[in-house]
Image (cartoon, rainbow, N blue to C red; front, side):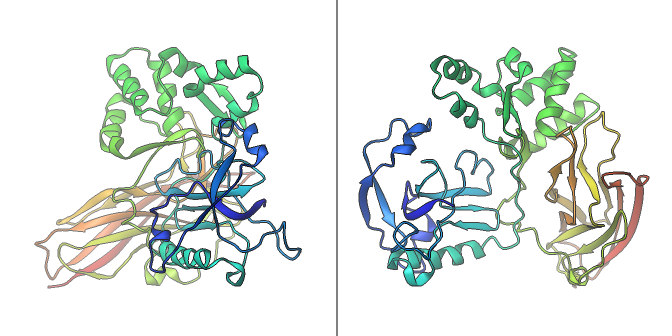
Length: 414
């Protein structure tokens, strides 16, 4: 909570400055804050910087106003559903984010209510409300669990020898929370851990039977997945390679963005599943639904598999091959004329225990998948059989792995 009234380093052609309300951005040059220069990305800033005044006043000029709020910029936008729109004069870092978006959440960091905003700031705020509505119900692809690798450089910024050495190893760094170390496996290969070429190299080595232990470690470490055979890794990579992205903040690993990101908002479960459902006393209950009960030939519908967990209980979204836990698996028996479209959209998950490759879901968690109806379908009543396998645990015990099957029906218009 250290943001003043002025924005800087903006994305000037962003939608929130374009409409529907006019935003007349006027710049004023102000002295660059001295403390910005202690950061590695602020050492070469000039003496003055242009700013846009969003608010008329701030906590330094009036007593009844708290500071605004910023988020650290390093790693803020290392997933494709996040964007930095503007920084702002603050007592943290020059790269701190004052205006930004992550999934369906918009960060408006400035503190004033509309009456004390500038006219241009007020209109930009209104435009931001209009803008974020487009992302309603979008699930975030990444939740922050670790710190960006640039923090490792920052901690040795005043030691030239250490800084030079760490810069040479920057592409091999990994983190557990705020502690960064060099991944010696990556360094030995000379391949950046955030470059998909590392995955392709390791899969090729497995296919050739070379350096298999190291390559399997790296694949599991940086994907959170496990395939027992090279063919499985190859099939996953070929299907996912155009949508892969690496996130430092999300745990130093690769993620797969959903197809048509921005067009699939992660719909709410079907109407009958939207009603409040009482959580079980222990473990998790499973509910299956479609986002609509009727559809036309050629339509795409969304299948929802919803877990409602008891308080402090969880199920497993990802587990490595050497884990005793069982990852959630969903099988769908499709009628003729229906195909799976894309990949599963998984719920938000958190690292669990000492092995950060193990990721779990709590509370109300929904897996989703698109189903594509063929153009030739007409007047049919389609039945889908969904089988869900999962394990539910709390901090002290695990229930035996469970299997649950349900059939649901979709009516297709004539």
